Amino acid sequence: NAGVTQTPKFRILKIGQSMTLQCTQDMNHNYMYWYRQDPGMGLKLIYYSVGAGITDKGEVPNGYNVSRSTTEDFPLRLELAAPSQTSVYFCASSYSNPVTVFDENIQYFGAGTRLSVL
Amino acid sequence: AQSVTQLDSHVSVSEGTPVLLRCNYSSSYSPSLFWYVQHPNKGLQLLLKYTSAATLVKGINGFEAEFKKSETSFHLTKPSAHMSDAAEYFCVVSSFNQGGKLIFGQGTELSVKP
Image 1 (cartoon, rainbow over the protein chains, first blue to last red):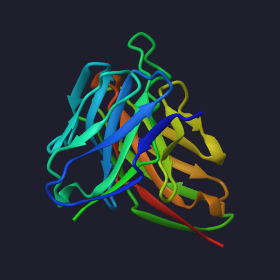
Image 2: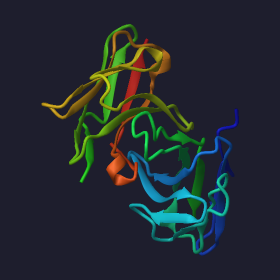
Image 3: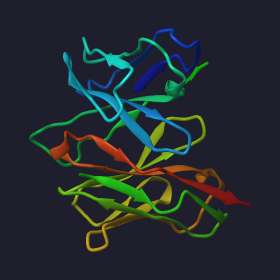
């Protein structure tokens, strides 16, 4: 019953460093998402993917890149870390079926990655 | 465009008293509405969801929410608060027409006093 697994749980970066946040799910979900959560705020969508090989921008994509080479994995890349990217990052996945609209798109979340850029 | 407004950033109740967390939404399409809970240093967990099957939706841990189209509201309630209910609660709107993307409210922090 792993669900959505994110690594690492915590990370401190220096300005200008790069890193990849890993996300993997074992539920065979077609949709995957990356969010960031800033203090006192709701989650904001960074990028999402509707299937392997397909990604699209969310609300706040600047400074991030993603890829989706497999159904299971959806890594998030920070190329040049900036203090504004200090946040908690959540990965989520869901199954969406265009035919059966109802009872779909419940997103399952990982435990989060807490990132500080100093 | 869709949006969600949680009317209270912080709610404090005593253990055993009712809980009311308020949420108003705006959606051009027939929305799906959710409440998620986030305990400290944890990921988000789905409490309940509305997808037009029934206006009163029952969720886990004794929570329920009522969809009121005329008031564009989806308030979360629980008859009797428990200490373990202390957490952050997010009201969320989604629409299949928008690719199923979730729009989150700002969150309401629920404190439960003994």
